[in-house]
Structure formats: structure tokens, C-alpha cells
Length: 195
Image 1 (spheres, rainbow, N blue to C red):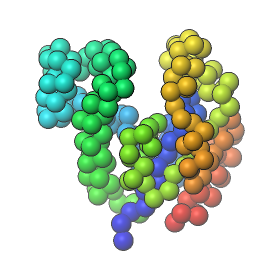
Image 2 (image 1 turned 180 degrees about the vertical axis):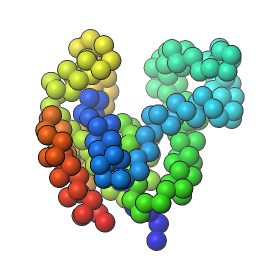
Image 3 (image 1 turned 180 degrees about the horizontal axis):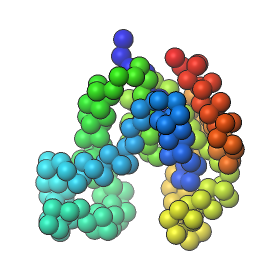
């Protein structure tokens, strides 16, 4: 029997990373963070580097280091550019997740991704947990965390299909700044249901 995989997603500022840290640190569930691992792969994987240089131009790496602003400018220029970059990075992340999962001793692992559905990473998950919070709280969190303006945060929010994803999820946690114990109890309940 393979491992059970819990997908964790939610809109920007919902507190996905906090929920993941509770799973990892309090409940001993290994969590794969797609965002962090994608950055690592773009920094280390020679095949990805070559493909990105072929696509964007050699200047996307300087002295072997990814130029994030160059990649971001290319990525956000239009949907086709984003699709081309994703076609390079997402399959590598999927393969890396499979390798990582095989190394875990636990029967249950989690994969955290803001773009769980859009990336196709949802196909790796047996169940999906959607982390949510009120729009205003999410805006405040991201403004504090990233130093972004309200307009920048709202623009990013408008690009996410939050309501659609929320409806597809198997579980929802409202992360309105509840006590850690409350969130842990909700997580324990979810683990009990899926195990």
C-alpha cells in the first residue's frame, strides 16, 4: 500500500505555511513545500537551468545564480510565457516530490502548493485541505509579510481561483487567527478521518 498524500492549498495570506508547520512540527507529518522546492530545483538542476536559458535567455542566470526578477518579468508578461516556464518546472517538481515521498518513513505525507489545482499537483494528492481566512485578514497578513501595497495584494488575489478551489477541497480550515490548539484539533480530526 502506498503512502497517503494530503494536498494543502489556499489563497495568498490564508496561512498555508503555518498549517503545514503545525503538521510537520506538532503532528510529525512530513510536508513537501512546492514553492521552496521549485526554487531549489531552479537553482540546482542543470537540465532546468538549460531549458530556462533556452526559453528566457542566458541572462536568466548570472554566474550560475537564478535572476528572479528576470524570470518574474518573463513569467508575468503573458499567459503563454507562464505556461512555458511551468512546463519546465512543474514536471521536475512532481518527480522530485515522488522521490522525496519514497524516502519518507511516515504513512501520510503532505504537499503544500498555492497552485495545487493549476499545476496539476492535485493529481498527486489523495485528499485536499483548503486553508482559508477572510479577505481583509489575508490582505493584512500579506502586506505585513511582503511589504506589498493593498493594490498589489488584491491584484494577486484576483488571479487566484479561490472559491472554485475551496469547493473542490475535501477539508477546509478557517485560519482566522484561531488559537494553535484549535487548529491542531482540526488537523488531528482530519488525520483521523483520512488514516
